Length: 199
Image (cartoon, rainbow, N blue to C red; front, side, top):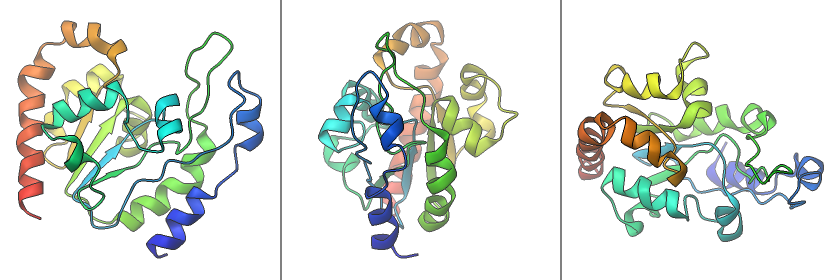
């Protein structure tokens, strides 16, 4: 399948129209499709938040600021589709529940699109697995909790780096796990520069 065929089909997807209409946000599907075959870096995340849903750009929020800092790159590099592709577990914002909490990514999105996209992207030199959903999909159902998976990052490097979600809600997690910024982040930044310099 060619890029226009696949990305256009994802952008036109409305499988979750009724699901989203029933959420507290009652929003319409708006798949955030940001990818290109041959990209050296894939950010495999969870699902767009409200700001990303409105902007149509992945990680266009404070979480994105923190993620780009972890990677050691700026906005211009991050949003160059020849360099970085985004592959969320769900391409649309799932909405909020009645308490204002994020809903999980609908499984039907990954069931429909993820393997075709992975196949189309090809042999990517660097994949960042952000959060438990992406880690379980790529590393297997036997994957432990996020902390254990991230702590075992050396078993997957240099091609795969499991990361916690860069949400500012995880600031307490970062304080409890200082090894992440002391050990993993420098290794990640080095690997990011290696794959970018190979372009």
